[in-house]
Image (cartoon, rainbow, N blue to C red):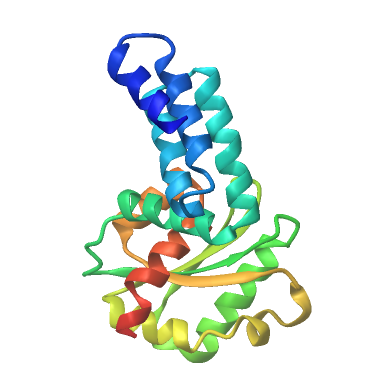
Length: 206
């Protein structure tokens, strides 16, 4: 089957059957390659033949692989994050805490962070601003810190469980971010994707 598909692609390069040959070849190779390589083949079909039934079928299979093997989805998100955010992480930074629940009281959570700053960083006069992101997350931004080291020190002393107490039982993520990447984050409205970038680019240096 693989050989027939390859002969068809070579013999009829302009044919409308080319997407079908590619998808059939991927099906035929599914038991011969690992899931990561299979996903790569399906992704190539989606990119090369957009808006075709074969691309739609390939996208469905990619979604299935992502559900069955979460590591593949994370790898895909990591690659997107690498291409999206700037790797220049010098200069000023913000600290960000994200509460993964849109039902939490933004004003109360922001007030908790302000109290933490007053108790621990009175002379630094850090601002704290809360906002609802994509109607899914509460994001509180603190800063500006002169550099990555100062922002990291602040983050290491920030304990969400102690600061928020019983105000939230939701998942919480924290990270630091440059102003340029903050602009990208606010445009994309996907703090989870930035967090993958943060974990890859900052934690080894901590």
